[in-house]
Image 1 (tube, rainbow, N blue to C red):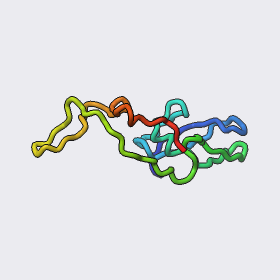
Image 2: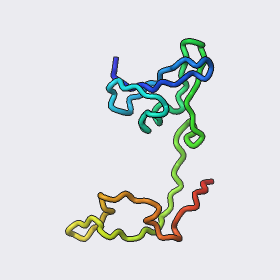
Image 3: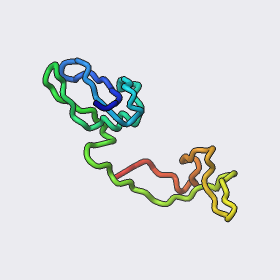
Image 4: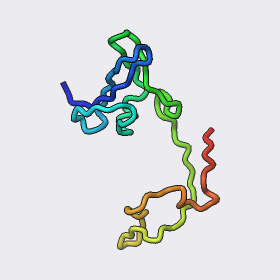
Length: 119
């Protein structure tokens, strides 16, 4: 038997804790709930029906922002970004976003900020 991690979720039919297994973390037989499981584990167990042995019911962990099936294709577009104060620079002149700073929408030029609506 392989190693995995577990998330225990109460069955919506009978209330008994039911185990969802994941191999998306360190696989050290860790146990979590929906409140403290790592995001990678939650994404792994999402949209997979599971069976409750106590009541013979089936249920799935769903999120309307992540429907079952293949993930939707991102609707990407090029947006202008303010130049960073301290880009990482290669001796031949290439530049990269600084490793010590995360990119955010605050780095976009105002006219490029997305509205948040996704159709």
